[in-house]
Image 1 (cartoon, one colour):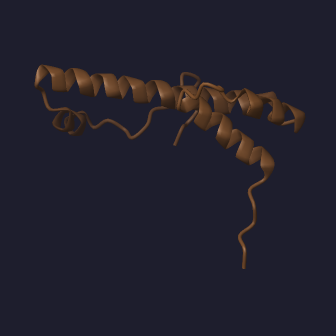
Image 2 (cartoon, rainbow, N blue to C red; image 1 turned 45 degrees about the vertical axis):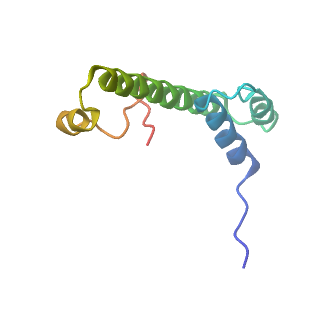
Image 3 (cartoon, one colour; image 1 turned 135 degrees about the vertical axis):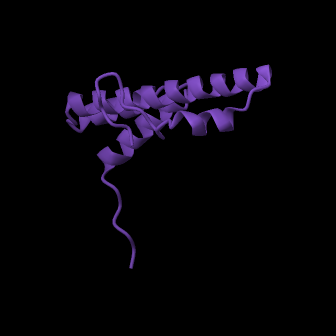
Length: 98
């Protein structure tokens, strides 16, 4: 039995988010046009964009912190465990990203 296909709007939202989060040169503009053509509400599109940017920025920040810690000779693993840091943080508007 084959599994049901994802709705094309879900595929476009995932593609848009991954393109933004990965800093893809196309920036998800094709998916943005598709989503608008499918009449996906702008609030949904904006939420996906906000979450993707937040994940991208959080990843860059964590990479920079890990680099700085390694460059200075401190252990990032121990510091992350000591801080009780959550696996993800909400966006500026409070939107959950996980």
